[in-house]
Length: 160
Length: 375
Ligand code: SF4
Ligand code: SF4
Image (cartoon, rainbow over all chains, first blue to last red; front, side):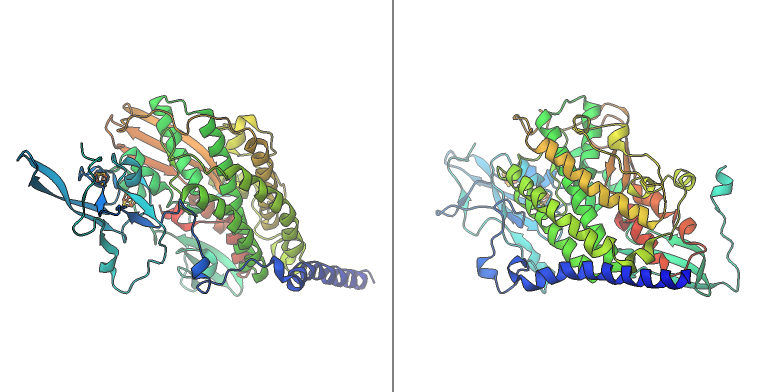
């Protein structure tokens, strides 16, 4: 007798517990306003990342195609995994002295861990984080980027 | 005493029926392999095989400066990334005898608790999914997204922040940080009871977790189990209480303890900890003092020769960092005592004698993060 009543009480307890869960899901089913799912990639045009988002390393250039990188190599030393390679050149300046300029600032996105040390330690604030996050490519060589644009030069005020 | 508790020698016999669970089994949440010996449906013994995702983080640390080490610790227990960072930072700060500003301590503690909340939410979704409650998975992730958005706004990344740096923080938190965190706490206080309605009270779930995977207090001590898994066996081991760091000495909170020691007890500890985390954040969020976000540090940090040790409470237990320095800018030796490593090896004790179907519930209730085991 006891086991039969236990059987039925368990059965009703089970049904009521399932009902409690169904109530929660049902509540969302009838109020679609509370649904937060985003329709990516359809919403690409309106999708905005936060301004601080660490998408990739970029070197901002101004309208005269000038950047602030002096080629000091501090970012290369601070990068924990060798994602940055600095290739510098020596060109004569107005006085005829040889001066160090950046030739290529190479950034390997495939190795970068977005630790932020390069952006933080750059003495002339030449680097920044970009907002791009769709990094998938078919060829991994495309993930190696040269950050200083061709033909770019050093900003006047950034010169030491 | 320990000989009685730890069956350290497992004798393999020829007629044993052995199946491998993992390394790609969905419920191990990473590359971990259990060698399970079965007798019918009953587990005779279980041997965890680790090392599939070993990256040699401790060795890599020996080649990195103290600032560079931070980003490696993110990648151990990636769900407690901020707390791992803090452990290394605190070792360096103690060795250099730097007093970090109060503002940093408060922000670090708030972020620790947000991190713990996010981690427990993900554990809750994954645990539900392992036991067949797929709805739980979506509900948990939905709420976790709010925390990740706060993280993204302040430090630009959602999971692996690298936001701590020896001496303080990389940069200040976003001006919206306080407002959004308070909004989240109000929101989550309403949503957390839904978790109980959806999963905790569910009859199928209860039948699968109650009385399964019993761990006694003695076993928890013998195996060095820490964190919520040990607190489910009534072992008070919360570093936040034993050796408060950050701003934990300024807040009131309870250490959740359960006496049952089964899977359901470990589940309840984590659910309780979510409420406690919200309590801690609420006490701190309005009182963040003004000030610098970092103490003055030299650009090249050289620890004085010697040994340094510090421990913190991550979402999974006790993480201890031990540094030997010979006075150079890189450590001579770096050792992490990670919580998951100890928590994993108690599995045999919990699973042996039980059914194979309970294995998923047991490993889920220990909340293992495999990269933390292998490092
Ligand atoms: S980006 Fe900055 S740190 Fe790197 S080489 Fe240029 S100036 Fe130096
Ligand atoms: S973010 Fe870190 S890993 Fe990436 S390039 Fe900069 S220093 Fe290197």
